[in-house]
Image (tube, rainbow, N blue to C red; front, side, top):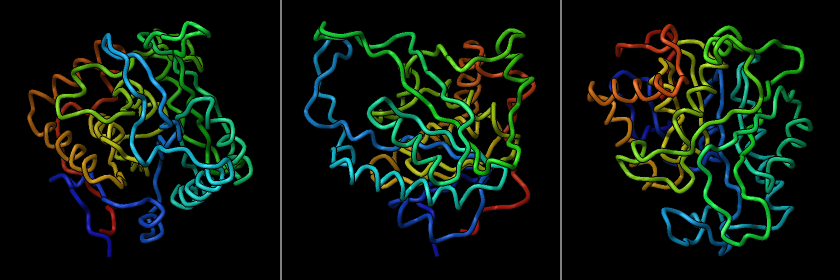
Length: 290
């Protein structure tokens, strides 16, 4: 039986320390939504520019590149496992760049998913291009797909329209990269901003829904989920990042910090007052089997 690395007192946030390839087959539970930020396999000695300094872009051993065949099989395996954990009307969101997103899109189709959108996240504060030999990288892509081509999925159209000043939300999202206030407990090298995950979660889930992240990292997905009144299971193979996830969730037990985070997201117009849970609460109903 699986033993959680950490579970919040309200049972709305659970982290399992382990490899998702090993963990996912060990339980039978269906999720309403999955967000996955898989390795991009780009840690091969490149450089970038951060805070006025030239830095190495290597993230860790988990992001070291492999052969195209290895990367394709890696992606096929986790996408297959995740599909088994989705409800029939569930959806999956996958972030990436041109290095991996096109092969993942092909695999989604091969495995029976139906691609709904390809979101372009246009960063409002990208790092500069230090080589000056090509255009500055300022975007990432996020695939949104549902499990079954024939089963309708959740999409909170009216909410997205309200967030977007009464206009239909497009597939180009202009959002800032991670802010300093999101690193109070430490930093993950590929940490996604709360604003991005909040919009994804509000778009495709309802209150109390269950969300899975098989590559949890610092659990931005889980923090955003709990801020929006959803429940979360994250799987993280690196012990340091599992501990970072726990610290970030424990930080939310401070009501002042919880309120500050919600206010910051509200100021950025990525939450809507009638769809964010303002008070902490117990979660009832179906729970994880561990």
